[in-house]
Length: 124
Image (cartoon, rainbow, N blue to C red):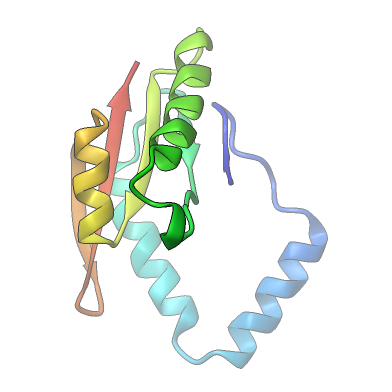
C-alpha cells in the first residue's frame, strides 16, 4: 500500500467508513491529527513515492523478502523522473534499523501519546 508521486483522493466508501470509525472510537481523530502534524513537518515537499505499509510474515523474515519488496518500490521511484525518492514512517524500532540498513535516512520524528514515530526518506 502506498502511492507514486501523486497521492490519490479517498473514494467515497472510505470516507463513510472513516466517519463510522471516528464516531465509534474515542480519541482516534486526535491520534490521527497528531500523526498528521508530525508527518506534515517531515514529509518531502518534492514529488516522491510513499510507502504506507510493508510487511513480511514472521516465519519468512530474515530471508530477504522485505528487502526485495522495498527494493521494488525504490526501483520504481528511481525510474520515475518526477520522483525524488521514497518516504515512509514507522513506529517500530526493529523496522527503523531495517530501513537504515536499506539506505533510508531520518527525515524527522515525533511522539503520539508516548509512542515514537520516525519519518524516513531514501533519495533516488
